[in-house]
Amino acid sequence: MSMYLKQKDIFWKMSKNFVKEIMDIAETKTHQEGEWLFQEGDPANAFYMLLKGRIKLSLGETGHIVYVVSNAGEAFGWSSLIGRERFSASAECMTPSKLLIWDKNKLQKVLEKDPVNSLALYKRLAELLGNRLLQSYTIISSVSPAEIHASYGTGQVMASPETDPE
Image (cartoon, rainbow, N blue to C red; front, top):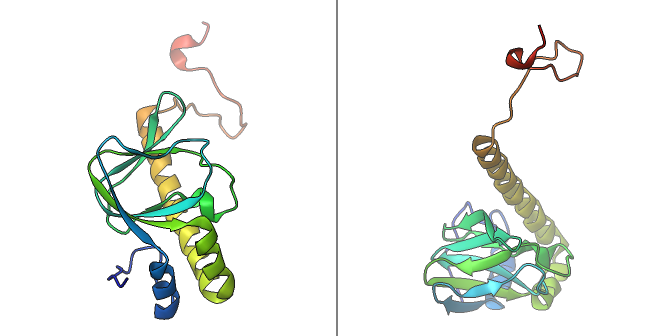
Protein backbone atom coordinates (compact mmCIF):
# COMPACT_ATOMS: atom_id res chain seq x y z
CA MET A 1 0.00 0.00 0.00
CA SER A 2 1.51 3.30 -0.97
CA MET A 3 0.19 6.59 0.25
CA TYR A 4 1.33 10.17 0.17
CA LEU A 5 2.16 11.25 3.71
CA LYS A 6 2.28 14.94 4.55
CA GLN A 7 5.33 16.49 6.22
CA LYS A 8 3.33 17.25 9.37
CA ASP A 9 2.31 13.70 10.09
CA ILE A 10 3.81 11.21 12.50
CA PHE A 11 6.18 9.67 9.93
CA TRP A 12 7.89 12.97 9.11
CA LYS A 13 11.67 12.70 8.45
CA MET A 14 11.71 8.89 8.50
CA SER A 15 13.22 6.77 5.73
CA LYS A 16 10.97 5.82 2.82
CA ASN A 17 11.71 2.12 3.39
CA PHE A 18 10.73 2.35 7.06
CA VAL A 19 7.48 4.16 6.26
CA LYS A 20 6.71 1.69 3.45
CA GLU A 21 7.21 -1.24 5.83
CA ILE A 22 4.88 0.38 8.37
CA MET A 23 2.28 1.17 5.70
CA ASP A 24 2.44 -2.40 4.37
CA ILE A 25 1.18 -3.80 7.69
CA ALA A 26 -1.62 -1.23 8.10
CA GLU A 27 -5.25 -2.16 7.51
CA THR A 28 -7.66 0.36 6.03
CA LYS A 29 -11.10 0.26 7.63
CA THR A 30 -14.25 2.33 7.38
CA HIS A 31 -16.46 2.95 10.42
CA GLN A 32 -19.92 4.49 10.72
CA GLU A 33 -21.00 7.50 12.76
CA GLY A 34 -21.54 6.50 16.40
CA GLU A 35 -19.30 3.44 16.14
CA TRP A 36 -16.79 2.91 18.97
CA LEU A 37 -13.20 2.13 17.96
CA PHE A 38 -12.25 1.43 21.56
CA GLN A 39 -13.39 2.36 25.04
CA GLU A 40 -11.39 3.52 28.04
CA GLY A 41 -9.97 0.41 29.73
CA ASP A 42 -10.09 -1.79 26.61
CA PRO A 43 -6.86 -3.64 25.73
CA ALA A 44 -4.53 -1.25 23.88
CA ASN A 45 -3.93 -3.51 20.92
CA ALA A 46 -3.94 -1.10 17.96
CA PHE A 47 -2.63 2.26 16.76
CA TYR A 48 -4.77 4.48 14.47
CA MET A 49 -4.39 7.18 11.84
CA LEU A 50 -7.32 9.16 10.50
CA LEU A 51 -7.69 9.29 6.72
CA LYS A 52 -11.14 10.87 6.64
CA GLY A 53 -13.81 11.76 9.22
CA ARG A 54 -13.88 12.91 12.85
CA ILE A 55 -13.12 10.91 15.99
CA LYS A 56 -14.10 12.02 19.50
CA LEU A 57 -11.65 11.06 22.26
CA SER A 58 -13.34 11.14 25.66
CA LEU A 59 -12.73 10.24 29.30
CA GLY A 60 -14.81 8.74 32.06
CA GLU A 61 -18.41 7.58 32.26
CA THR A 62 -19.71 11.04 31.34
CA GLY A 63 -17.73 10.95 28.10
CA HIS A 64 -16.08 14.33 28.62
CA ILE A 65 -14.48 15.19 25.26
CA VAL A 66 -10.74 15.72 25.60
CA TYR A 67 -9.83 15.93 21.93
CA VAL A 68 -11.33 15.66 18.45
CA VAL A 69 -9.21 13.97 15.78
CA SER A 70 -10.23 15.74 12.56
CA ASN A 71 -7.17 16.16 10.33
CA ALA A 72 -6.11 13.54 7.78
CA GLY A 73 -2.83 11.97 8.94
CA GLU A 74 -3.56 12.58 12.63
CA ALA A 75 -2.62 9.63 14.85
CA PHE A 76 -4.29 8.36 18.03
CA GLY A 77 -4.42 5.23 20.17
CA TRP A 78 -0.83 5.89 21.25
CA SER A 79 -1.26 3.80 24.42
CA SER A 80 -0.49 0.77 22.25
CA LEU A 81 2.94 2.22 21.36
CA ILE A 82 4.12 3.12 24.85
CA GLY A 83 3.64 -0.15 26.69
CA ARG A 84 0.26 0.63 28.23
CA GLU A 85 -1.92 -2.44 28.57
CA ARG A 86 -5.19 -0.50 28.27
CA PHE A 87 -6.47 2.59 26.46
CA SER A 88 -6.66 5.70 28.64
CA ALA A 89 -9.58 7.20 26.66
CA SER A 90 -12.50 6.17 24.48
CA ALA A 91 -12.69 6.80 20.71
CA GLU A 92 -16.02 7.20 18.93
CA CYS A 93 -16.68 8.13 15.29
CA MET A 94 -18.50 11.47 15.10
CA THR A 95 -18.94 11.04 11.32
CA PRO A 96 -18.38 8.14 8.93
CA SER A 97 -14.61 7.68 9.14
CA LYS A 98 -11.84 5.94 7.23
CA LEU A 99 -8.78 4.86 9.21
CA LEU A 100 -5.43 3.16 8.96
CA ILE A 101 -5.09 0.66 11.81
CA TRP A 102 -1.91 -1.06 12.95
CA ASP A 103 -1.88 -4.18 15.07
CA LYS A 104 0.30 -3.44 18.11
CA ASN A 105 2.39 -6.65 17.80
CA LYS A 106 3.04 -6.34 14.07
CA LEU A 107 4.02 -2.70 14.46
CA GLN A 108 6.34 -3.53 17.36
CA LYS A 109 8.22 -6.04 15.18
CA VAL A 110 8.85 -3.38 12.51
CA LEU A 111 10.00 -0.88 15.16
CA GLU A 112 12.42 -3.36 16.74
CA LYS A 113 14.17 -3.94 13.40
CA ASP A 114 15.00 -0.25 12.86
CA PRO A 115 16.07 1.55 16.07
CA VAL A 116 17.11 4.78 14.30
CA ASN A 117 13.76 5.36 12.61
CA SER A 118 11.89 4.03 15.64
CA LEU A 119 13.57 6.69 17.79
CA ALA A 120 12.51 9.33 15.25
CA LEU A 121 8.95 7.98 15.42
CA TYR A 122 8.85 8.16 19.22
CA LYS A 123 10.33 11.68 19.20
CA ARG A 124 7.66 12.76 16.72
CA LEU A 125 4.98 11.07 18.82
CA ALA A 126 6.21 12.95 21.92
CA GLU A 127 6.12 16.24 19.99
CA LEU A 128 2.57 15.65 18.71
CA LEU A 129 1.30 14.57 22.13
CA GLY A 130 3.01 17.55 23.74
CA ASN A 131 1.22 19.88 21.33
CA ARG A 132 -2.09 18.14 22.07
CA LEU A 133 -1.43 18.57 25.81
CA LEU A 134 -0.73 22.29 25.34
CA GLN A 135 -4.02 22.60 23.43
CA SER A 136 -5.77 20.92 26.35
CA TYR A 137 -4.18 23.38 28.80
CA THR A 138 -5.45 26.27 26.69
CA ILE A 139 -8.96 24.85 26.58
CA ILE A 140 -8.99 24.11 30.31
CA SER A 141 -7.71 27.57 31.22
CA SER A 142 -10.31 29.29 29.01
CA VAL A 143 -13.21 27.21 30.36
CA SER A 144 -12.48 27.70 34.04
CA PRO A 145 -10.17 30.67 34.55
CA ALA A 146 -8.76 30.80 38.06
CA GLU A 147 -8.84 34.03 39.99
CA ILE A 148 -5.30 35.26 40.33
CA HIS A 149 -4.33 37.38 43.31
CA ALA A 150 -1.04 39.09 43.84
CA SER A 151 1.12 37.37 46.45
CA TYR A 152 3.85 40.03 46.34
CA GLY A 153 6.52 37.34 46.07
CA THR A 154 5.47 35.50 49.23
CA GLY A 155 3.84 32.58 47.43
CA GLN A 156 0.80 32.99 49.67
CA VAL A 157 -2.65 33.47 48.18
CA MET A 158 -4.03 36.83 49.21
CA ALA A 159 -7.73 37.34 49.86
CA SER A 160 -9.51 39.37 47.19
CA PRO A 161 -10.42 42.95 48.20
CA GLU A 162 -14.15 42.25 48.38
CA THR A 163 -13.58 39.58 51.07
CA ASP A 164 -10.97 41.45 53.12
CA PRO A 165 -12.22 42.16 56.64
CA GLU A 166 -12.26 45.89 57.47
